[in-house]
Length: 301
Image (spheres, rainbow, N blue to C red):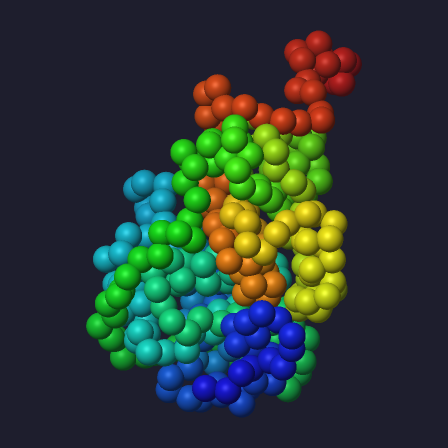
């Protein structure tokens, strides 16, 4: 299948434009999946033929805090009629937060051809030529079998603790500056949280949003290289771990480093701050002191 976007990204084949998707929308081997922060968005109107994966109930284990098991992933894709040979195009709101998470999950389970719609749901909606529908897509079930699992794409807690102590790899905190400094634990209105604010020792701050333009599309490679290599000091051949709060924003930056800039050894720490910030005795760095009882009383006096 043709390369969707002409650019100097390391792997331009993983991005598709709205124009490319319109031209390939009715091909049986192209399957579109919407994954949103606001899971009601799909019912408000979606790309024709797209199925919706709910990131809370379908892309996570509902008992353990974990990604889907291999059998559950196979079942999910089989029920959606997706085949291992299909080209998967993912998109969603919030500039593809959870679409990038789904991309990472597809790659953990070894799906060969996975792509992101550049600019996500917002970019698609901005052009009246792009079709929308309220009809739920119906696809004949398939038998989906995972060929192999790429565990090298996922950082686990023990590895992160070792990096925090040894500094043998780079840690990239992609949360907001206020989360990084310890001023807040989570963005306003978001429920997944931790017992302590702050960051993993040694982590460098690079908010995920710096990688996208105002319309949600990814910035040109030269600007991304300036941000991550020149300013942040990352190296393309050094082990790098991205993290955020629950693993979705860090998937976005993992995608940028791996596929747009060609970094060789990037892992996503999907446990992120809601795991690390709840640990007993874990080392934490921060600029903002935790308020005392006296501070709180004074604030409401």
